[in-house]
Length: 246
Image (tube, rainbow, N blue to C red; front, side, top):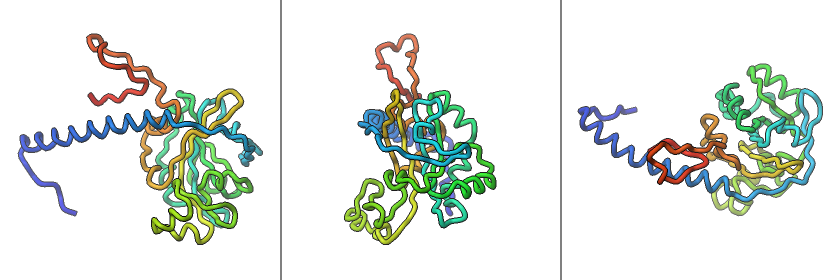
């Protein structure tokens, strides 16, 4: 791997300012995308799902705890496997308790869900030392309905919003050949007794995560902050989810 070019401080500053222009453009584009994500329509979930937890069977509403929002990480864990996916494992390892606490402060719960029996989940959780909620969807349609367990014998294959024909054209024929588990994140919103699916991301879309704000940016309510304009700048528009890039 080659190292960056060695230049003078003045040359570095010129190059850094050029990059800063692009970074600001990216930040503004990301903010606009996040706003569009919050405006995405939502779908009411009327189907009853049952999950197994360390405290017994629970429904989807129970995964929220006392929060209004729920983020689910679909952890790849086939019932035939002894261990969860190594990539999913690495991602979960990087989620500290402090991040989960920050999410809960903003009325958002986080949970792991896998299509493997609870016994395997609990053994793997103990080995990894994870404390976050982790539920088994074994025996339910949850993973198939949210397109992270793929099996043409169970349900028409769809992944990352591509159906079988589109996957084949994209060179992902292997997804159509037999059962497989895939990664993803799904967001839900509770309004009274009603639960809504607001967002899901798959494949490399899951790589956008990093810190509680990135998690919150996926949700319908966003960061839930009101930007107080500094004195003398009241001409600038207020933003519900500001980015401090100016």
